[in-house]
Image 1 (cartoon, rainbow, N blue to C red):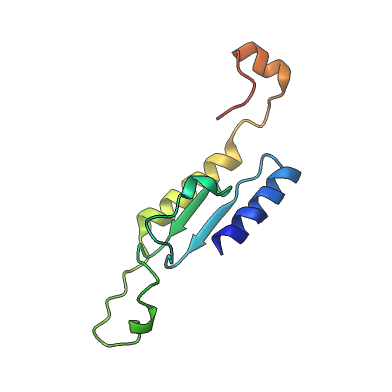
Image 2: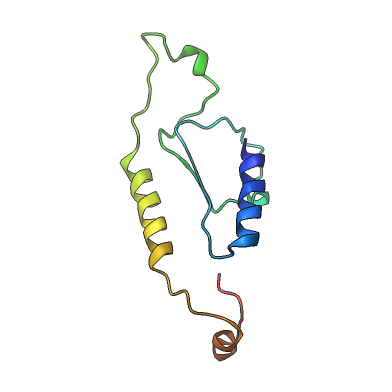
Length: 104
């Protein structure tokens, strides 16, 4: 699913370069050997900070389901807010004044 999200993000950013593409999930189903830098999404949030690999055990009484982490939600909120409030001016003339053309 992350590959599909990455392709969608790439398509969206080709049409709207100022867009922000965020993936938000309750649990994650990725292994540690996945290189996240190759994907075109801006950020991936895991609300419960928990893997999805143990989903067959979720309905057992002893299963501990992490609560949704408020720090993760706040980070998402501040990232989107910062993106929406950022200075959208730019272009070559603005970049020449700075000495570099593409903001990071």
